[in-house]
Image (cartoon, rainbow, N blue to C red; front, side):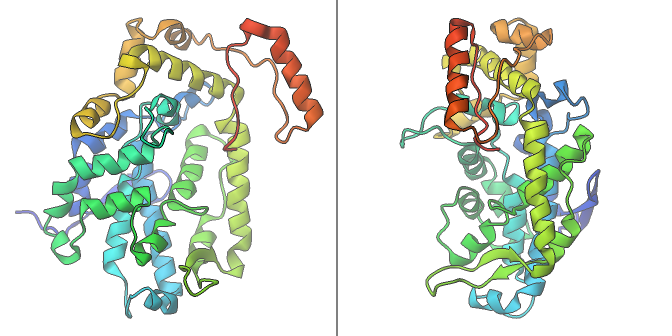
Length: 363
């Protein structure tokens, strides 16, 4: 029988090496996690930046590593505030294990070609579309409950799949867990910090680089402003410029990479080709285990195979032949009324020739 306390290392192009436990290795070995090897991080970005063919698999490992570095820094610099959350002296080992699992599994429910497929998610009971976070939480509940619960290392932590899923979707009510969730979903979270570094590296650009070592070293807990509020994450004064560098790096990556006109065009083609392939032109919902099993059978390989067989319609053919739609006009980042009026005139003049209008809301 293998030693459950044995450590394993994985080589990473960003951090050098990432250390994982035997427990985490078993989770990574599950077929639904291995599926992330077949989902590209940046969808059709390689049509512009040929090196950007990395996957959600390596990104998920990187987010777990970055979340661990942030956790350790906070635990080291904010002992007094952590005591108020119920942690005594010493490292809070259980929440660290929970954060690592949540970071590792945060993208487990991504659609093929990552965000390109999210407009094909069905509507939930609230009338809005499901998000990939809903799928990730559901996949953890349905398919990772046993491997999380029954590993010998969990005898020390007693972590459940429900706790991991609650941290991912924000349904947890535990005060301490709400605080740690900012490491997974926040303005300076491990997800954002990793994808900027990793996407920049693979795309071959410098836009996404920032002083992450300094930012990690200066991360700490910030006391609540009011008695009934929770502590929050922040940086000490020595890390302010590094934090600003992160914000600027994200801005540059959006303008130069994520919203590059050709990448936007191929994102549209991928979405419409998938709509041709999917029954009912949308993905199954995350409501039942059966629906999730059907959803998880879709990955980039499956979709590309269907496109290569001619099942992606006109948009599939455009992908195969790199015959993408061309940009006609774009506004500035903060258009004034006169610019919007001029843009509207372009649309009116084009009429039915206008194929799509894309918005850069996130950027």
